[in-house]
Image 1 (cartoon, one colour):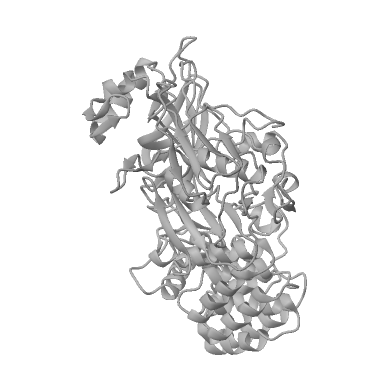
Image 2 (cartoon, rainbow, N blue to C red; image 1 turned 30 degrees about the vertical axis):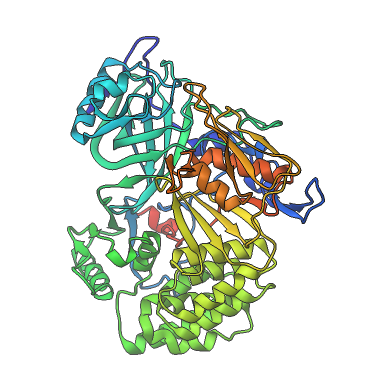
Length: 622
């Protein structure tokens, strides 16, 4: 279906061709150079505070906050000479005869409505977009707006409300994504409208369709593949003095706000079409993943259609790599020879270690005797990658070997080992090891252990949603120096390491837009918080609370309501505003806790499954 882009000077809408991440990369800002957590003394001489230096200077628009995102692994077929042709982990595998089709990120887009903007919204909306938006919103039903009250209102009323703004919503569905997979979406105010700011807005449920721009005046749209909704996060540091770039208030991100509604098509393409080979590949895959219905189907001599099994929905990349690492011909004696060849090759420093680990996993538990011998190898890379395969096969001895790597400060694979332990199911001894790492002197190790325990839903992490569940506040037991850790990818979380979360007077904080002030005189032992409604300028009565970071976060982000004693229990502020307040309090020396902003992890080959392309000679074959 062709979607006409409205014309006219005030209503022209040209679908953006670059994502927020693209704009960050084009700015030439390197996150690794500017936001590496450092240790410094506070102005008051209190204990050293961990903080992210150069925050204001490096964060650009949207909630990605200006980092240069880690480069995606190329999941396609690269026309380069492959070093795998002679590898025992490649010869005779599914990967030798096939490559993947359908692994490019898929752009989806839609028009939606953001509410909760006070007087910063806009009543403008081009007629073609207005009609589609109204039709879509009537299908949703049950809307309300803070300005017109909690009663249900019609879509027409909402769009005409100055509290709302029509926006463009777009995102990229990840490769191999299945129904329910979350992904980040970018939100931009509609060009040509009078929208002033999207700050503190919330996107109502919006359908996202396949989108391909065919010209400046038209775009091709297809079926609905995803839906987006949730609170908007804007760069909380854009107004900081010395910021390299002033990010616009008309662009935002919803972390994990997109959800896939339909599995993406996925198939293996045979390099040389052969129905006999396609059938062999189908049978090989279905035999390996035999717990449920068949997941592979040879639909033609050229294609084998795949379905990601439920057990791998959270790790589709690993599943795709494992499929290509399966050996087509299986025989116990042949597998024993293969395992020995893999072990010998693993010892070479330049070997494809991650692929060898996948090949071991593909052999199954029959490979454990060989792996068991490798766990104790003196070379770290041999021991580590053997443990990677053993863990996937449920071997407790492999868990012990991986724990050794996670606890060794000199091990080059330490952080990757911790993340590997976070993927383990069961094996309670690994939970105990991860909990012990929460006391490590290395901040990166403590954060990695925390994230691993969160992934495993460990009881040592006291976690609770704040407000409408827009983010979680976590308390982490730790005897090392306390700090605040702020997530900026995936689901938003504020994690407090250690128990001492006290706030020291004198305190004076005022949000850049004046929505809240936090004060405390030198002699006071309480914080005074005042909320200001930016839409009307009205102020709340002074709210006094204990000078605690946890209590302050719950008050700022909690639902606007009174507790059983008639006291204000929440102010309904957004995640970005709360993060900015915590950063400023830390910078000004008011916190015992330091401040650490999440640094995106550049995934190593052991964590992002390598889906290498075909050798150059094979690429030239028809």
